Amino acid sequence: MTRKANIQDLDQLTELFDQYVVFYKSPSNYEKHYAFLKERLENNEAIVFVACDDANPDKIIGFALNYITFSSLALNKIIILNDLFVDISARKKGIGEKLILETVALAKEIGSHTIRLRTAKNNTAAQKLYHKMGFVREDYLYSYDLTVS
Image (cartoon, rainbow, N blue to C red; front, top):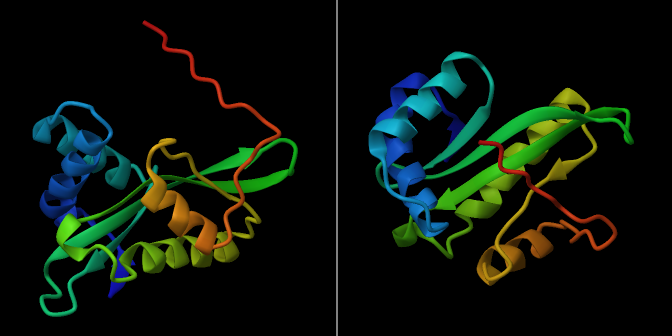
């Protein structure tokens, strides 16, 4: 089962988010991640979908964290599927696909024609899922980041 996350999900969501961050080689920091997610949810700055274990509906086993923004070229809203993670014990069961489908439904609901994401070059498992779901890897544009200190 998938559904929109709420503030009561913060503890379990933070545990999974912390695992996600560690997967991408950043340090674990439960308190900092909890505060970050709490602020996003309370301020309606992100839409988070969670997947629950069918055998235990109170247990969250995955999440998709989405931000709605705009594209000047498309002259429309776009969704940034910023974070997608499924607990290692629940992988290969279609959970990631279900979470992406929730994001697709959100895009249709708000009239967006684009869902954008980034993933690590070595995250081939995720890349296979994205290709299966119809995502097309962009070869025309480069992605740049600037760290401001």
